[in-house]
Length: 251
Image: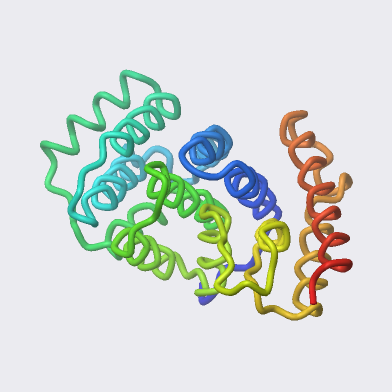
């Protein structure tokens, strides 16, 4: 697979990430985690290699551990976030076993090898949530350090994401700030809803709006859970509101 194509499951990533952006900070990461957890459970259940054991879960835990240590500072809030995530996702007993194995089993520290283990366990439309989880983890302490950002970027590239896709996910997990006095905080916020930064032209804004509006159209969400449909409707309205605001105020 040379490049990831956006699938229907891109919807899930955008819903969770948009919530993260709108709320901002650690609370955002926790809110996104609830949705990510639901998605990962579904992918785990449908994994064609589920019988292969704990390869996927243990590889993900190892990546999480490496990310936490990547900036040289082990933050307790990040550790707690991972513990809670694994406990709620895989159950208390299995989570305990995974953390025990993390200490006892000699796992590769090469990112590409760990990503390969994960690829063997889940379908490629699950990669979005893996990257979303890592950004949520990195941002739980209120910021994403340079080392954390570089680590996640390497993971994303090994998952065959394009740089622009990684940036779009990242942008949803950080509060955007204007690099000049040209744009108001409101404009920056509405650009963030569309996964954009200042400096883009109206064509890019229109293109982003059309893409998101199409993905969040009620017809696309039919058949999904009521919670997902409600989040999708909320996101659809949010995208529409941001587009209308930018049409009137972005120059």
